[in-house]
Every structure is written in structure tokens, then in C-alpha cells.
Length: 590
Image (cartoon, one colour):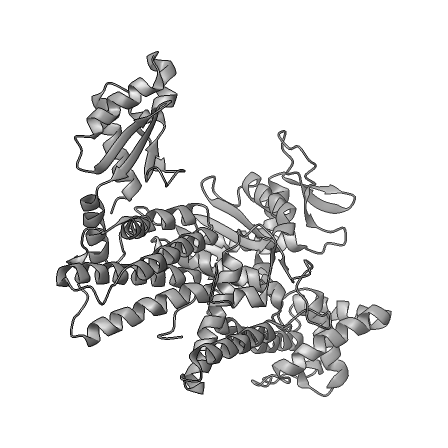
């Protein structure tokens, strides 16, 4: 389906052309004065200079033409030359009927689907997920779902931190604690055990202990660095330990991400990119892009238009060791070879922007990606506590993600029990709290523009009032209750039953519903989930106002009642589709 705004614009363009003016002046926008009109066109102001007349003369002439159209209920020329528009009730009715009958609610799939990779997650193995991982997971998952909804082939890659000194530290500490394990016996030639010699809890304790010891014990640190070198150069026993670390960590990560309803298609890590590094380095040298600077191998990426210094992209350190830039470039090589994406989107902390400026420029300058391949940096801000500082536990430490989820769920459970006055059985209340709690976390994050810092306020985010996830879900549950009662009356909602809007409140709600496909398209173009949040908050407010002013189930006229029910049904479908894109669902009751 075409967007409502496009259909309105086409009608206004026709009027401009019929009056002898250029079609470019017929652009229509949402009104910035909804108290006066629903849509507006300011083209007369822009055309006045070209046509050597007052803007109001152009506007008056165009409005005379528009008054012949069945699309508009009202078209007015207003000094000094604005065109104020109100669409006809029948036009909105027909649009919504078509929308409700469409399983995609009027959203057309991309005419030319792209292959996209979303790089999000980025946790280090052997470490528990903490609140610092929240934004990447939530924003990345929503961008992935948004891309899929509009028809693209989207792959989510967790891009694990599974390389470097941390692996050597774990191996060294494990060797100190359990020296008799076969992995540390150089003469062992048999098959290594299938079961890991540690649990996830032990692994999560081993790494910080090893890290702390290495800070004070230079010999221990040297041993860990040697272990790192050996595991990276194919030491059989150490490679087996590395596989155990990955198996145990990934199993735990999958469980914790599942609690956030976050899923990845690719569980690749930095280690997967390592085989591509030697070829990458050789190619950059052979083609003359890489040169030595103070012993390090670098590629210049500065441009004449730069207003601030952009340092060279370092490929290898003076000791020959690779860096994050090397791994990220090698990962691009791997992705281009295996998936040939049209676009790669990186959902990472905005403080890494310069790193990705260097990586992207290096990839383009050296031909690692094709000229039309998109490389996008979606940097996010910091999640802060109510004190304005990065979110911490009461003791001042970094909060584990599972603890944050548990705290939110407990708060939601308390509110649900309180609101229901004990009518909901405990098991159902717990499950409902989990569903609503997830909406509080995700919507609380996604309703903010990704690049901005925001305050994670548990009390505000778990509120059933205001711009919150629970408020959106409460609205959906309210509509479900209305529809269920309608069915209990012996009726079934019908797609084609949407009637003419009765009053401004209903028409306003219907116009908001009609803007759904435009809201989705705009959110995808800008990779901006917060625009979906803004849309459904406005829609929920519109429905609740409609609900309070309208006797839906008590409407005596059957045809009118059917129309009100159909609008309610469409509102529910749009809201549920949107929260699905955001990455959470709704309960049956709250």
C-alpha cells in the first residue's frame, strides 16, 4: 500500500500542475498546527518568487482545484500563503479497510531486498553479561527485527571477544589449579575429554582471579602471555581448553540473551577472523597501502576534508601483534567472502566512533569492500543511574544483567499483585511480571535516541502511566479485553467493518493508524527504533482517549459498534506488530 501522506501529496501535486505550477511545490507534510488542520502544504511560499506573484494568489488558485477532490473534506488558503488540509472521512475509512485486510497492515516489502549483517552484542567469553551489554543487545535486536520486517535478509552476529590475553590468563590459572589435566601434558597424544574441566561459575571466577594476580605478579603475567601466544599458534592442548571455554560461555550467553528475547544467527568471534589476518597483511603490503611507522605497520586514512586529526589505522604493532583494528578488518574480509553483505551495521558504544572511522576508511581505501557496500556505525550512549553516573549496584560495582532483570521482574510482580488485588494466581502473576518487566527494560532503553545517554529509572520505567513499556502493554491488554467481551457477546470482529469516523477523536486515532507504514519506513531508513516507540506512544494515547470518550461495547447501533470494534482490532494489531519489532510481547491480562 502507498503511504497515506504520499496519496495526499499526489492529489495536491495534481492540483498544482492543473493550475500551471511545477509539481515540486505540491509537497505535503503533517500539520504543525493540528488545532487548525491535519496536513499542510507550503509550496505556494516557495513558488511565489518563480511565478512573480503573492503566495496567497497561488494558494487560492490551488485550493479551488483541490475542492473538486474527494480526498479532502476541507482545503483552505491561509495568509500569507499556506494551504491547510483536512482529509475526508470516507478517504480515511477506505484506507483503513484496505490496511486491516492486509496481513502486513499496509507495509510493502523492500522491492530490492538487501543482505545486511548487524554486529551487536560483543561480550567477552568467560565473563558474565552485565548492564554494559544491555544497549547493544536491545538496540541491535530491534534493528535486526526492523530490517527483517521491511523485507531484507538480516543476519545478527554476536562478535564474541574470544581472543587475546584473557584466554592466556584463563589457561595459566587453570594450569596452576589443575596441573594434572591432560591439556597441560606435552606428551599426551590421546583424545581430550568432551566435558569441560570447569563450570560457568568456576570460569567466571577464574578469569578475574587470574587478571588480578597478573597485575601484581610479573612472572605470572609473562606465563599468561606465553600461553596466549601458544593458543594463538595452534598449541593442541591449549586449543582444546579454548574450545571448552567457548562451549561453556556460549551456552550460558544463549540462556541469558534468551531472557532478553535476543537471538543471534552467527555466534562468531574474533578467533574466527584470525585465519584471514596473514592474507590481509600481505595484501595491504603488496598493494602499497601499508607502510612502517616507528616499527608498526599502518595505513593512512586521513582525508583533506577532515576538521580534526584522524590517525593512521594501525594494522600490526611493532612487535608484530595484531590489534582490534586488525581483527575488525579481517572480520570484514570474512563477512564479504562468506555472506557478501550489501551493508554491515555496527551497534557499539559511541565512544568507539574514531576506531570505526579508521576501520571503515581503511576497508574502503584498500578495496576490502566494494564501493556500494554500506558500512554504518550506530553508536549508542551510556545507560546511567538516577544519579546521572553509569549504572551501578548499590555497592558501587557493575550490575550483572540477570540481577537487573530479576529486580525489574520483582518490582513488576509487586505492582501486578497490588493492582489485581490478588485476583491473578501467583504463577500467572510471575509470568506476566516477566513479560511486562521485559517491556519496561526494552522500551525504557529504545524510547531514547540511541546516540544519547539516558537515565535508567526503575520506578519510572515500571510505571503503568506515561511513556513506558507497561503503559503500551496495558493499552494492548485493554483492547484484548474489549475484543474478548465482544466475542463473548456472540460476535466476531470483521476486517471490512471499519466505519466512518464519528467525531474528531476517532478520526484522529484513525489517521494515526494510517501513518503506520510511514513510521516503519522512516524508522528503518534512519535505523531508529525510538521512532517506533514515539509512534506507538502517540497511538496508545489516541486509543485511550477514544476509549474514554466512546461507548464501544454499549453502542446500540450494530453497524456503528462493528466499526468501533474494527478500529480497536486494527489498533491492537498495529501495536502488537510494533512491540514485536522492538523485541517484546504482551500478556493476555495484567
